[in-house]
Length: 355
Picture 1 (cartoon, rainbow, N blue to C red):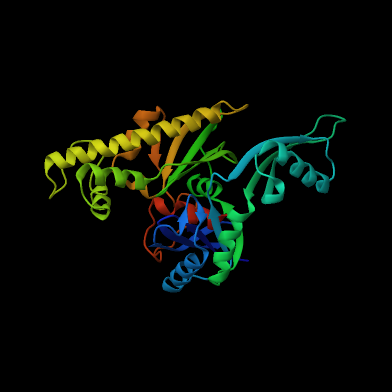
Picture 2 (cartoon, rainbow, N blue to C red):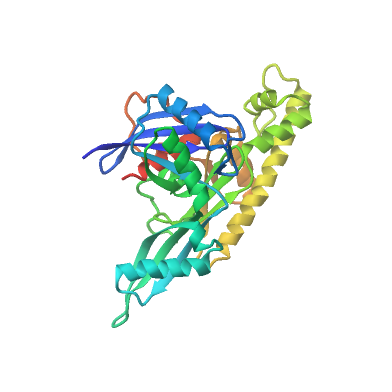
């Protein structure tokens, strides 16, 4: 039977949601987003639970979103993601215990302070030997998850699940069928550049191989632009949307010298992000059985910055493009809320997790 699910992303600067119909596949019915005051959410964690509940209540009411079957995302450096191998276990109940035991070794989070989940990615078995499981392990600090859950409860939002934004990002940006026949295995890297931080996820085409949160976001570009041009933050945010990182086009109403200074400032900021990105990819490729990077796919609000894909491609040395958040979902002729940009990729992917 078809069911409706709402994917909800709670960011540092805005709430965004996607309502989907799931019936074996996903059909997008509605998207919505609204800004929220700074400070309610910071570093991927809720700092003011009552105020977030108030914002959520108003958001769901304004956009007439269902408050049941909601899947919310989390992204924080206080979440650990690892792929581990476990051998010698036959009983599924014993497997769960073995995973919990290994979690204490694999991730630096005390199990008594954590919420743990895992998924078996694959199983191999040699003649006469017990099976060997390849397991994706996710562990998060309990207070991080409880803050989100409490805010949703106070707002009357009934959660169907809490999911990693990295997983949601890959669901939304990975085509249903990758045309890689005959090619050597390679990795798809998806990055959602948020206001304060960016979520990175690496996929082999079917599962998440690696995930990390980078402490860099589009707000840093705006702050640097405001400082360089000596303007207030809202004006710098407006100018950021007009200036392209590539070429030398001068937007109407902006003196050529200021446009050049703005472009130089934005390029310098993107170089900082590129160094963080390269460092994360090098760390991934230092892991056993890591794959070569096929391409980097961008999402998030900063992905809409003019020329950002081409600029990053030149800095990191692999193919970079802006992702299509609709590549894995069906879309009606008239979509409530308008056609979504890359900033809506995560809530769409969160909703898809209900399949």
